[in-house]
Length: 202
Image 1: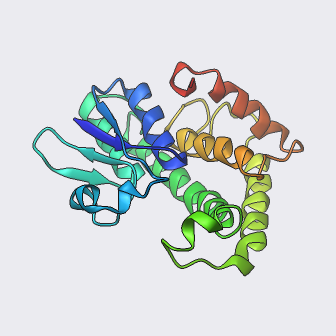
Image 2 (image 1 turned 120 degrees about the vertical axis):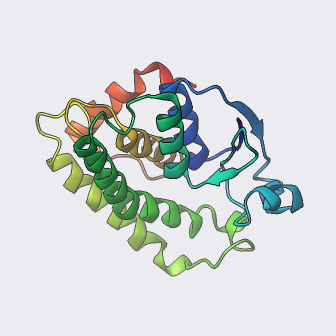
Image 3 (image 1 turned 180 degrees about the vertical axis):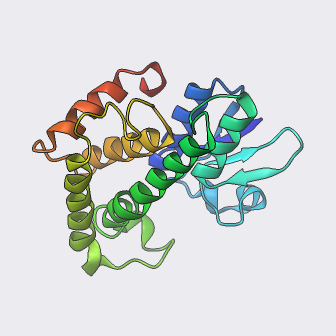
């Protein structure tokens, strides 16, 4: 398999998933800053021009980070999604909550503000919404922190794709002026646990 990847939190999610699952994947860098992801070769792999994109052994291409991570998990027999149907349902529930409530707001808050020079020619941007989107992400992190009492990971004692997704975006947020509030003490402790895993080492 080949993973066409590059800079940013979305590729980071899949890179961590590759390490967690032990998948044998050749990683090929596509230069986001030069816009290589929006040029002919990559558009043939992914018509949306996004990173990352996984090329399967049969030549098929899979994009979208949760789809790639789930495929790698299933292909390798790993348990990043969970061991049982109930585990997998719980993982998908939290991945969706984190994606819609935190990740999308944080990412668009960045794209419409600090990232505007890069993104304004590539997508429709709403600069006037940036501050509110960042505030929503911060509020939902406080909400999530309140649900972490007695839990080592998002799904309790079980490390999952939900942890990978949140970690990669909190790591990104800290680098673009959206750090995790120190008052979120449970999430701060959770972040330290995830940061100590071999899969998240840079």
